[in-house]
Length: 121
Image (cartoon, one colour):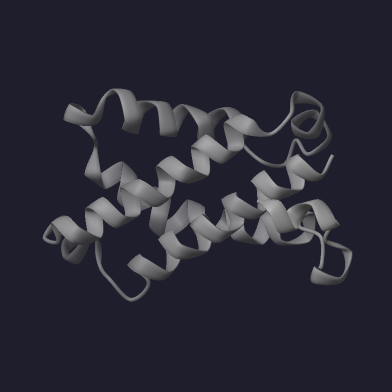
């Protein structure tokens, strides 16, 4: 289903962003920079939101992706925003997002095979 492909593409884009934001930064840099914290947190939230929109059948076919953990992280950030563990956001952006990029890249169709419907997204 092309919608699943679109949501996985969103996950890939935002995982790349999160990884790029923290690239070359230390955890101490991250913890001292509210703007960087907000950017990484937003990226992780969007990744989880997109993951939650992926169909169950797609998730069952691609079990190498930790769908439940990704969605759960988004829910914690969105609903327990007053108690965000910034060290966990750091680990997610610094360690998990680059690994997620590696997992998602082969799942995203090449530009030559993008359905026409994607023009409306």
